[in-house]
Length: 214
Image 1 (tube, one colour):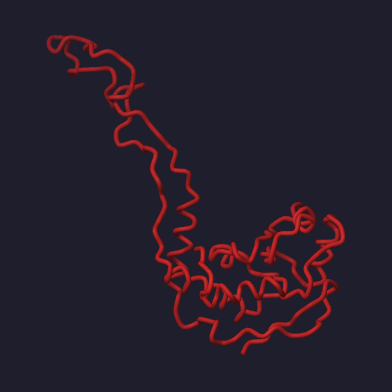
Image 2 (spheres, one colour; image 1 turned 180 degrees about the vertical axis):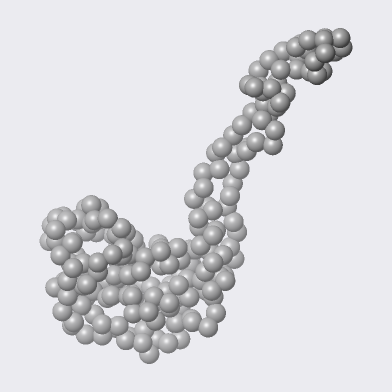
């Protein structure tokens, strides 16, 4: 059983949060994490690059000059890739970069990524993660009280508009619902700040009772 300190909004310890050892996976899943992160990043690519091949470039089929007798290399059409303004040989076309990840692999990757954060002591649990008003200074004061100085992932049970507005001007901080946290976010941010309700939602995902998104 792993215990995490629970803090209040002022950074004072108010108890412990227990994480069952059965939910932590530290002996496997490194390759799964690698595959899922690659799939997530590949899925973000637009894949909209498009070039015209010689059949798509506007122009007639008239030969630039006669076949023989000019002393120049023979040429059949202006749309040839060897000509300036001609088509592109083997150029990019719109495509999808999406990669398929099996559900079980995604679940193991999620378990491993979360387990690494817990084992490193990078998860800070807050008893009640809410602000009275949407002020950046209030959110910055919260992070300072928790000892968070760099990039951080803030996990909440449900997105609070007041909290989102207060955090949007804080650099390198991302707020996300517990049901939407993915493996890339867990590996990208060195610190995870989670509310108690978010921890319960994460526990349900770790148990495999809900569909795990990569």
